[in-house]
Amino acid sequence: MAKIDFTKFKVPVSFNGSERIFNIGKVLGNAMKYTGSVVGDIGFDKLAETIYFSDGPVEIPAEYIRPLTQVINDGPFMATIKRELIKYLNGNA
Image (tube, rainbow, N blue to C red; front, top):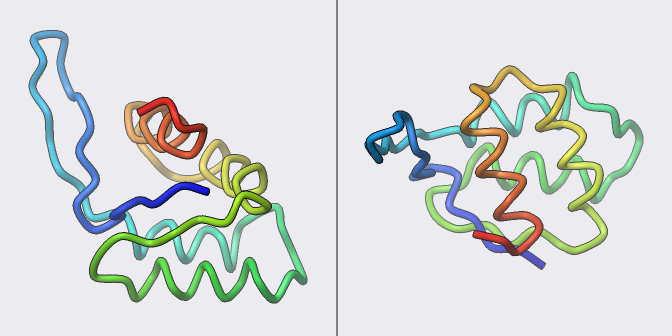
């Protein structure tokens, strides 16, 4: 299980170590529900809604880490956001 604050997601944006904070909750929630590769799973849809409307950390159940990783890989995110999200989901952050 991973716990991530999608409203204040910090990622590196340069080789010199600069970082930026992004609010990716709404984009990720929409991608999960409407453009994701997981269709018809009520729990995944509920998680998408929770992420979309969150104002703090959200717990990601272990069974949704793999499908969420697929949505992130296919989603409209900068590469640095994708890399950091996947690291967090896999417990490597």
